[in-house]
Image (cartoon, rainbow, N blue to C red; front, side):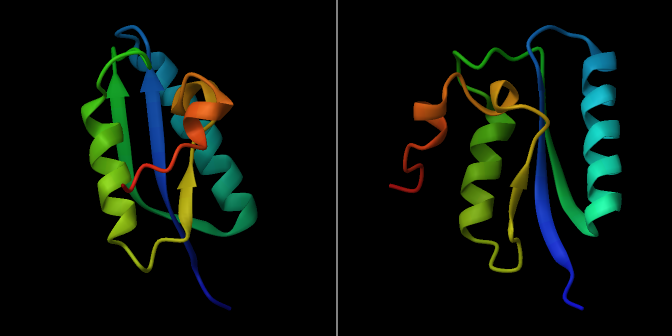
Length: 93
């Protein structure tokens, strides 16, 4: 059986590490159930989705150059982007 490998992205709008920990626990539980391995965690704490997020940007660049990574996972679409339209934008241009 092939290992499914993902990146994980966590974001909290305010400096609240408990929110990051809750997201991490949810992802770990889901990945354990589905047999998914997280190869790298990217965390933007105290970062709004409306401004530059350094680890989000780093993750998007890395995933394009990581052929062994099947995708990325986050707990909610709102943690990843402001809207569905923004999430669907082609980031690798």
